[in-house]
Amino acid sequence: MKKILAILFCLGLVGALIGLYMFNKPLESVSSMKTNYSINASDLLVAFEENETSANTKYLDKVLEVKGIVDKMESTEEKTTIYLDAGNPLSSIIFQLEKSDSELKKGEEVTLKGICTGYLMDVVLVRGVKV
Image (cartoon, rainbow, N blue to C red):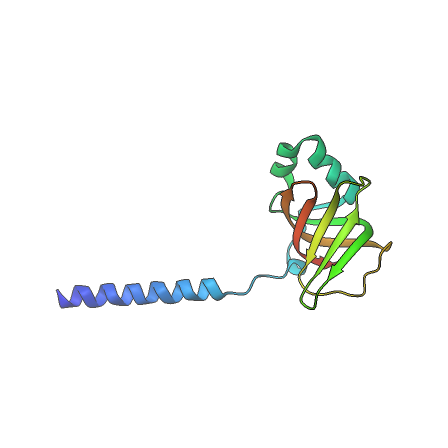
């Protein structure tokens, strides 16, 4: 009986250590991930506006490279949020960059890479990097 309890305790300890390692494992940088789709900002927004279900099936949780014009930027010390002009004054493509980037300027044409998290009034991509 003691032997069985000792084995169960060791297995539980190993499981807990593996869980702790996986929980604290750093995320892979988007820059090293394979791009699933390359698309223009206006085309991405149109895809979501015309058929959100189809666009979610195609783009949700995928790595996208999006080309567009920087419309607006919001920066803090830790991160930068970039709004790409998508041809609709009510909506845009929003990139939350992995780290702060003050080199981007309003009106600049850029290609950004990130993971698509969906659409409300804007298409949102997270963990973005400049390509």
